[in-house]
Image (cartoon, rainbow, N blue to C red; front, top):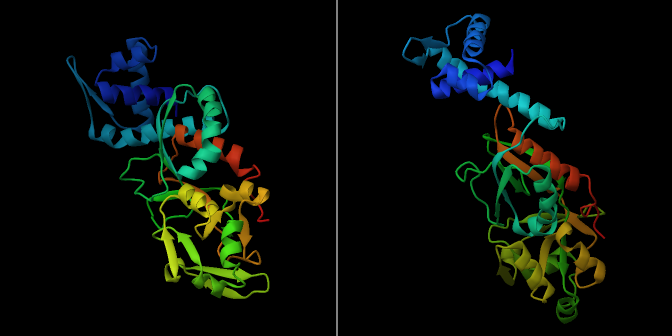
Length: 303
């Protein structure tokens, strides 16, 4: 089925004017009418009612319209996936991501992406707080967990190794925990919605990390602020390795309980509303992030 004719049909439905739709696509009125008639013969139904004064959609045309739009979108997405320059990527892409990760990894890449797709407008929402993707009208979001929501689809970006860490000054003052049970006596830093985490040692010993049951717990709902307060010696926190690998390397943070790791394996996921076809603007941005970050050395191993 010819997608150029489908574009003509969609435009004719939107304008209720076959000749005007044809002119938009560079077709003479007679050619546009012939193409619509050929499409109707192909599908075996009258899609548009014509009279000398007006054009209107038939019931069959109303039913066929969303499928025509989807076939056009599929062609655009397929060409974009293959990197074909024939597809113009335009419009507005609304993207949400955790602020710390975006500042460190995504923001430096934006000039490259914008040069590649100059007609695409990016609307970025950066926050460590969780929110509803659908209600917020976002096209795409970066999350560190897959949501149990049947209306969403996820694509893995990269692993998200988590480690316990603290400033050397804090450990000198309070002493390092010898095992996970000692954490209850320490000052811990956590998100407000932090759930108990299961830790497992290299020998297979399991223990729970429960910040809210500790003697002292500082609640902070921003990842960067947690990192900064940890650097200042406020306590022990769980951090993504990608966020603290530089500090661990230069010694301003220390890996606490290095023999233990989280039993689950967190990852960074690109989340988007479920659809029969992913729009070209969403696909090219996902592919771009995966090409630059998913295959890059984003803290693959804990020190």
